[in-house]
Image (cartoon, rainbow, N blue to C red):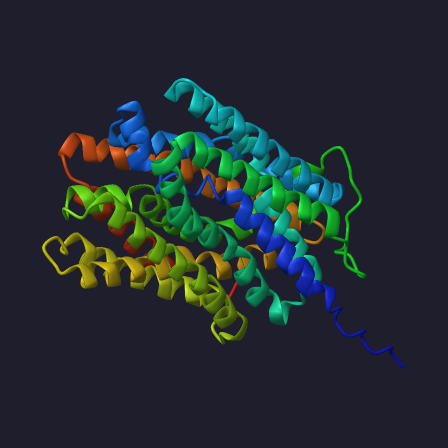
Length: 399
């Protein structure tokens, strides 16, 4: 007679809170760079492409660092890896705040991105370890809501700090948020009673895992690439575009960015919970998000001259779907991982996304500098989203 499974530990909710807090604090400044765009422009005399390079610098190393962080998380304690990463982010942001040139700021942001590599896959792995599949999407959604929540808080707080005490004060606040949240995770996290299964480590482990993962990547990769491009275009350029095309003051544009990011934080929970119950699989909410984003971008491109309430509504719509997609996506990634390779799978999928996180902001800004408007950039992204949606619609919605 089989022994009934033990009820899930209530400590999983503490773990979820710690992982969400680490996500929120770790991304507070990095995801808030778009809200600081006007302040950085004024301080260093930047064009639109140079504003985009700030985000690229903060996201550059994870292209190669995320898979490495995933392997480390499969081997070592999550509390050690995430705690050290948060400390590195904090130290780097303190250094950036004391840089005397824009090039110096970019250099320190590159260093910060090394530590930032650990926060995303680390939180994803601990949630996958503590939550069963029937609630994993919901839990992943809550944890991933930390990113747009951190960005929303940054849009609310960092421009005020920069206006009162200079952009350096905003960077110092970001350092404090990263360090405090990372240390709380390191001190209070503990592994689950039944840890995830491990695999015997061999010299060719990296190649073996990649061979297993490669057939599972296409649907994850194409949807992730299209949606992350939307997310970071909004994050970096929404306030500047609202100022340039709509004539909306930068302060008001930052508030609309806050509204979009807050809507996205809520959507990550809602869409991920939907993915737990969707009869058509976790991919179906992603497909619906892509369709909604395409419609929202079409409305946004045509919106100059519309009343402020309508523009705010479109921004919130784009934030809801343009940020909310990540909850079901990361749950899909974790469940597509082979045995003993969740950390590596999450790290690899995020690293592929990261290439476009680095490339899209400066390319989007350069297109604006060349054409004199952001409208063409939004049109290109809308076309890419529709193309991926039509391609993916030919396949089954089940992973």
